[in-house]
Length: 148
Image 1 (tube, rainbow, N blue to C red):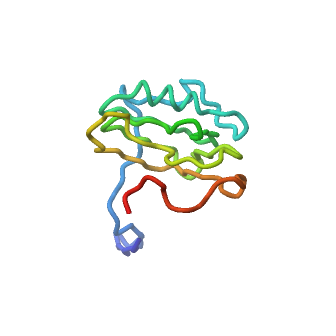
Image 2 (image 1 turned 90 degrees about the vertical axis):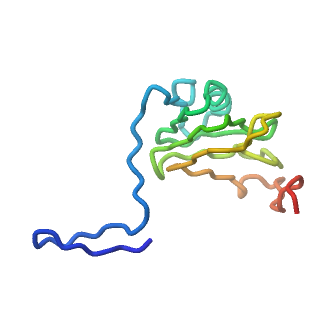
């Protein structure tokens, strides 16, 4: 991202030339994964909490991921998204970490079954760590069911 120099009242300031992204402000449609039982300590499995938070979402909801390392297990089935939701974290300190030794899985996040629309998802300010180094059974080849 390019930086532009601006002089204002004799003070040199640097500003980003990229698009401005406002800070996240929770609202009535915000669903905090901790309210659904997520711990985010990097040791406990937070999969059920994330699934429950996503199940409570609807078009226009924001799933908020506070700072922490949330262990998730997409091995049995992926995490299902509703149309029009946002998943927003608190920055580099918000991490979804795939559980050790999960094995192969196709998707971490995907649309709900029988949903004709895959539209309007926003993912911002969090990290997804697929944890490949701690999963010797995982394959790193491209998706098996994706169109070639």
